[in-house]
Amino acid sequence: MQNGESDVLNQFHQGNADAFETLFHQHQRAVYCWILRITRNPAASEDVTIETFWRIYSAHARFEPERGFEGWARRIATRAALDWLRARRTESEFSTEMLAEVAAPVEADPAVTAETRIRTAMAFARLPAKLRIAATLAVIEEQPQKDVAAALGISIAAVKLRVFRALRLLRKDLEKQGITP
Amino acid sequence: MNKDDQNRMKKLLQQALPPVKGDSEQRRDLWPAVLRRLDARPAAPALTGWAGFNSAWFDGALAVGLFGLAAFFPASIPLLLYYL
Image 1 (cartoon, each protein chain N blue to C red):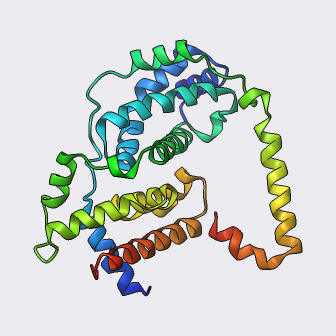
Image 2 (tube, rainbow over the protein chains, first blue to last red):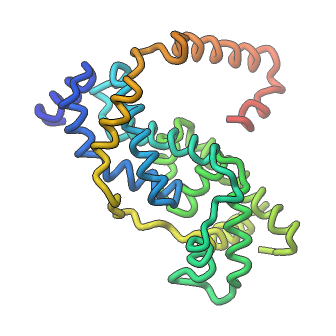
């Protein structure tokens, strides 16, 4: 870590507002993109990013400068996005535009019908938030499992378990609807 | 569910919900909104959360409780792992 960067992190730890602003401008895009991967909703991702940086500033005294900012911020962002997922009703999960996107993705497999894709997306939205977030990051976004584990504050084994449970519940839901994956 | 089933489910899920673009830009500058948020809800004092409740103390007590449960009732370990 360079001296200048280290100074900013130490100043932020002390509660310096200028250091916080510097860190905000350095990391806001990465934080926003990470949250967007989880929520898949640009407007909500902006709100959750604001909430995340509020939480980050609130927790400045607990920040450990020697451990770096990015991973810590990502963990807080993941928690804020999880809270957003939990607060959101499943029925309102998909707008008309999102359903249209699900029905006709850019690289669609012709063997999978639009209806199957929509039903799968809706069944996925009904999963418990903590399983959904693990499956979203590890399976859909194909993020390394160690990054997902760090962001969720759990072990890699726990990530694998959550993904397995998410896929199993998803399959059960689809089978109830007469869809055999 | 075996490995093949898992792979089929993963492919179906990726078909239903393609990954979002990782290089997306937000549509507006969020700094003014962050400042407004900080003004509206000043930062909480360090290490104390809701109503002065010390979360570090609670986390420690919870960890000791769970460890004790696992030590005295090993059969509860799979259940604890399930709810991780």
